[in-house]
Image (cartoon, rainbow, N blue to C red; front, side, top):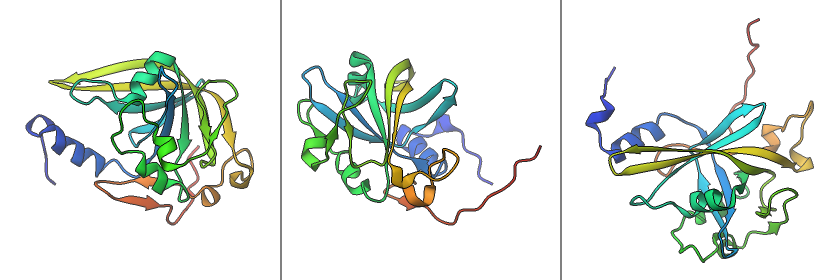
Length: 202
């Protein structure tokens, strides 16, 4: 087994090693509003559940040359955002939104996704995602190593939206119907493969 000291690696080398080992990762497609009303959309695979009670989600957003990315800046200014799940039907459009656009240009408009009004937050959701979570900003943490700064954002889910066709039984979403897409390392993505069950020990 190869043992590696992370301090001996560059930022890129650490990223490559982490992102190609901690996988598969769900992909959060996040919408947020700029001060001028521009609807921003961007994907993040450093994303997961924090807790169920309260219902919290997290995304990690690296800054560029110390400057907030649009998503982080909008969330910190407005205190709201919407997280969408990425599936086989929307992954191509979600990937297109990763292009670098100036803050006043909407990635959502560029890729032609359909806005839908949210119930609690001002940020619109997107019809193309079968599951979305309206969130308010719960906590913001920053981590810095040298010139690299990361914004760690925790959002409280204030409304769930789940399309009927992905609902299974017992309040669960059927993963086979959802057909989620996961992020692997590099340019690789994965569809859902074989599913199996294990009983948890008592």
